[in-house]
Length: 209
Image (cartoon, rainbow, N blue to C red; front, side):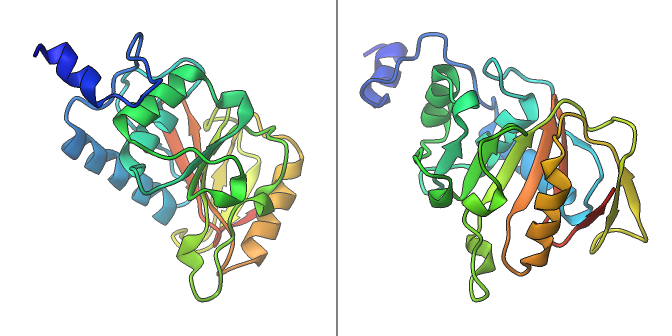
């Protein structure tokens, strides 16, 4: 049996390898590196972390794709906003991660959205006071994480205040983030991405304009 036939024998029915976007060359070590950057982003809210510049499916930020590769597996249901749910992305994630795609935001442990998704953060799983870790982690694709500073952040992991500028968010977002923070210990944690850059805003972070 050829190498190609061996691979094809493990491919899910209906999943084509034609044009499949590659995953990590060294899955163990690269996943660990991206996981550490995600942890740093969430423990130091508002700081910009960067991942290596590797291929990603069209329409998906490199940081978004690598977060999915590092954080998802067969036991982590994912919801993708319709605007981002392309055949190329779905095929790549199913092949490299084996993750299950769900139809409703509230069923997901992870979600990938754009800033103009049709809904708000309460559509995702909020966790509970007993199990706050069962909430959804939301990856939000934005235009830039290096725009002129318009937000001031306060909270754990921030020494005093931290100024950030996120381009591409509509006026709903400050209110949604304030509501998300008020739900603590429930609520969602967010990872914003732009190109190879990522920034964390956990539910404990207060945002002022």
